[in-house]
Amino acid sequence: MFRMLLVWQLLWIGVCSAAEKPQDLKLKDMSGGKVQLRDYRGKIVVLNFWATWCGPCREEMPMLVEAEKSWAAKGVVFVAVSLDDEKTKGEIPAFLDRYHVGFAVWTGASTDELAKFRLGQGVPDTAFVDESGVIVARVLGEIRLSELNERLNWLTGDRSSGAPTAVVNHM
Image (cartoon, rainbow, N blue to C red):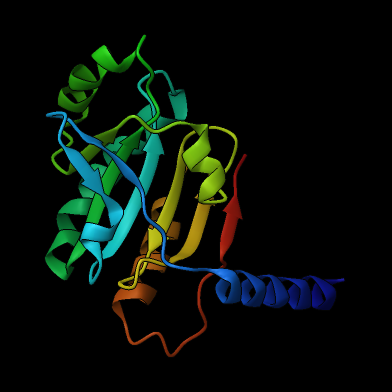
């Protein structure tokens, strides 16, 4: 059974990486200006999809804020992508203040972007984007610090060791 699971996982990683193409995402920043993922080509990006009304997002965000402080020095960019709609987007500034979010925050995302990036049906979800704009890993549901560090250590390292699991599902 273990061997079969391992073979399936290796096939899944191969299928995912072979099928991946550079992604783009066009949204707005907190000032209403247009932003797009392609502007970050050449950098490793952690895209965290969240919403103010999401309980697990409230649990996860402080960890991301702390992690960003150390990973930014290694050239990693964190972007918080809000799925708040017209009814709740007014709560975003208070959320950012409460959790001391200092990295980029984009608004206007929907479940369409989650589907495009092959993420879960809800938030939080996190996608890891390499320097060429390809999503190399996904964590569906609340990410753990160990999962974040494992993927970023691999992305910022020489990548000669095996890649971390392509998809982790906590949903």
